[in-house]
Image (cartoon, rainbow, N blue to C red; front, side):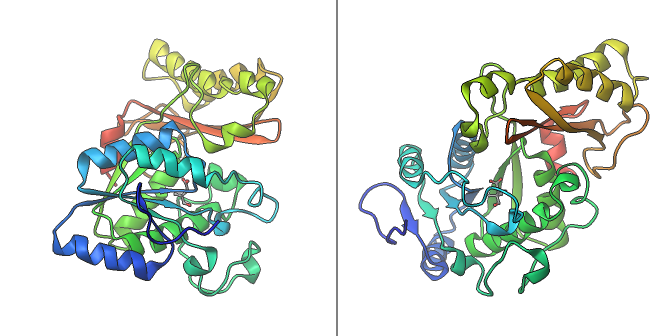
Length: 312
Ligand code: PAF
């Protein structure tokens, strides 16, 4: 679906970089603070929370909707990724978003883009040291795709503040390093994960779950919480392995779910912890497969999201 640059009501939908730059220049002349929420569409309450946070802290709000091919492997679900532009626009309209940046693939990848990394041409951004572990161990080129598209979007949108959800914890950490290393002049804001009543973290992929799978999916958050509780009860000498063992046992109680990994890492360096949790606290992350759908989640242990969001 290609929507025109001007709409009479609701957010202005902009398809081209040049059209957006004209709007951005006018905002710069008016000295407006611009909040940016990058998304791949299929919006849910988690995204809306980011938009509300951006609204409360900025004069203008831009949401991008772009399903980024570079972060999908050839074996993954790029074609099947949910595309729900009309309902997304209706939601963003209600929130008073100013601009929806909705570019076609050729606008974002002037050199073209193929999913096979060996065949790709053009410029890519890689954050070494934070992209190979956790999600990167299962999806080796994922964060290269994310860092590449987010740096393009930052260069286009030129936000004062950019808003990301804690649910994608490793993504937040990768972007934080990228902002620092490439000197993007913006503030990164990380917003706590929004959950369903039973604890399941909100995600666009949850809509793939059948009723039976949906009932099983909260076990990931239950497992992370069980690990957290064990640490609280057993105290500071508890080791990373003990916490992970508790979480693993919890997942095993749910036969409809297959564990991919648990990771207990330093929240700043993402280095895997071996013994007890140190002064920095930890990010406790996991991924499971429920049927064909991957679910990821994380919680911070002994550190809070504000400290984590602002420290390198
Ligand atoms: O978190 C997402 O939805 C995506 O990874 C992002 C940041 C929009 C980049 O494509």
